[in-house]
Length: 62
Image (cartoon, rainbow, N blue to C red):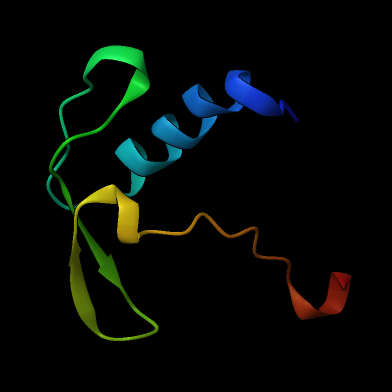
């Protein structure tokens, strides 16, 4: 796992992969725009700042 400023590309890749409407990648790995679906809330999220990247682990492996 990367940390610090090198972690930004990993987060950007996850956000792009999970997007319903893909954001365009701006300078310094910023992602303006985009839309994501939250199955936990049953709603759509606009903009990556409102989006957390979680690491899900199956309960049997926890």
